[in-house]
Length: 500
Image (cartoon, rainbow, N blue to C red; front, side):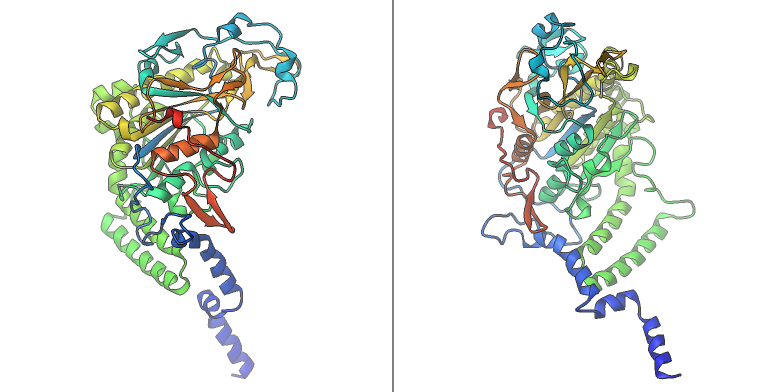
C-alpha cells in the first residue's frame, strides 16, 4: 500500500467525533464554542456586580428547586388562556350607554387613525348581547353567561385596563405568553421553571393542556423555552389516553428492558458530553430519566377516573373526552403534586360573526358554558384544599373586542360579532397574593379605550413574577450579548395596587 492509499485509509477511519475533537482551530471549535455560549449565562449568573441571581444547577438535575429572590406569595401558577380573545363587553364590562346606543352609526372619532383586522366603512355600535347583574359582597357586574364564576367574584381581582400593541392573534398570544410578539423567546412558564425549578422531580415542571378542538394561533411557540435550555420548555400533555404520546412501552418492551436501553443511551451520552462538554447533552439524559419516571407518576396524575363522581360532577367532567372541564380537574391534580406552572388553552373565542360558531349570540354562549362551571370548580377546590392562597390563577385572552359590530367591505356580517380591539381588554386573577373582590382600571362608557390605570402586558408579567418572589429585572439570562428578561427592555412596573 502506497503512502497515498494509507493516508486515504486513515482519513476514512476517522469518525466525525474525532474530527471535531482534533480540529481545535477549525469548525469543531467554532461549533462547540457557539453551542456553549448559549448556556454560559446560567453558569455565570450571580457574578456580575450583583445584577443577577444564581440560577446554576447540577446538569443532571436541571429542574431542582431554587429559592425565590424574596418571600413569595405564590408557589405555582395555573394560567387559563381563552384563545381567540373573548369579548369583555359580553362578560365583564357593564356598559349601559353602549346598550342604549345599540344600532347607531359608529362615531368618526372611533375610526380615525385606528387599525382593524376586518372592519371597514362605518360600522354600527353594538351593545352587549347578554344581561349583566351584580354579584357577591363586592357588587361586581358580571354577565349572566358566567353564573358559576359569579359565585366567586369576591375571590377575584379584575384588571379591566389591559392593553396590547398587537391586533392579530398569533403575535398577540406570543406577547402575552413570552413578552415578545416575535418567535424565539421563552414563555412565561419557561422563565418560572428556570428561576424556581419544580417540587416534583417525577413530573415536568411546566405542563400544557389543550381543549376546544384546535391549538392556539401561536402554536407550540407559546410554550417554547426559546433561548433558555430546552429542559425548561412546556410539555404538552393530554387528559385522555396516554398523558404524553409514546410514553407507554411499545409491545414487547417491558420496564426492565426499557431501563437497560436507557442505561445504554446514558452511557453513550456521557461519552459525548465528555468529548464536547455541551451541557445540553446531560440535560437530555435528565429528560430521558424524567420520561422513565413519568411512566408511573404522569399516568396517575392525569387519570381523572380516580376522582370521586361528586368531584367530576362539580367540574362537569366526563373522563375520556378532550375537554376544558377535564383539563381543569387535571390542573388541580398537577398543582397538588407540585407542578410549578400549568397552562390551559381553550380555543374558539374569536367572535367575528363569520358563522354560527363565531357568533356572539350562538357559538360564544357555547364557549361560556364550556369554561364557566369548570373554572368555578377549580377555584372552589383550590380554596377548599387551602391551595388558593399560594396558587395564582389567571384567566383571559390576548386582546379585547370592539364596541362596534363586525362588518367587512362595508357590509354587516350575517351573524353578530365584534372585531379585535388591542386598546382595552380584561384579565382576572385570583389567589397567590392578589387582592380579592376588586376591580383595577377603567374604560370609557363604550368599553373602547382606557381612561384610568392602564396595564401593559409587561406590567402584568412583572406583577406575576413579583407574586412568585422575583424582581423582574433580576430574572435574567445572557444570550446574544444581552441580559434577556421576560419584560424585555421597555419600562415595566409591578401593579402594586392589586397586591394583598
